[in-house]
Length: 53
Image 1: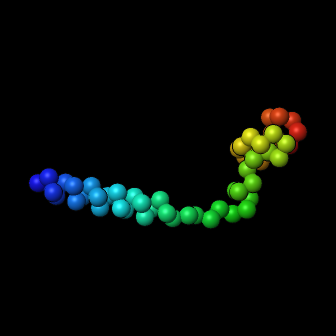
Image 2 (image 1 turned 45 degrees about the vertical axis):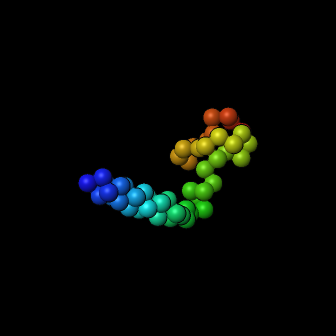
Image 3 (image 1 turned 180 degrees about the horizontal axis):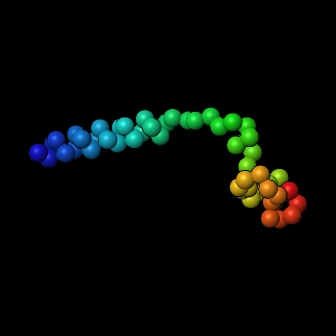
């Protein structure tokens, strides 16, 4: 019984590791979501709260 639990646990960890290695490529528009002036993340298309970007 314990061997079965350990085996399932290791298989689960291996599946999580495979999903962790997947790298999704984001479009360039999503990659540039930080303000150029202050570096804070921007949400949406509006102006940055710092007033510079």
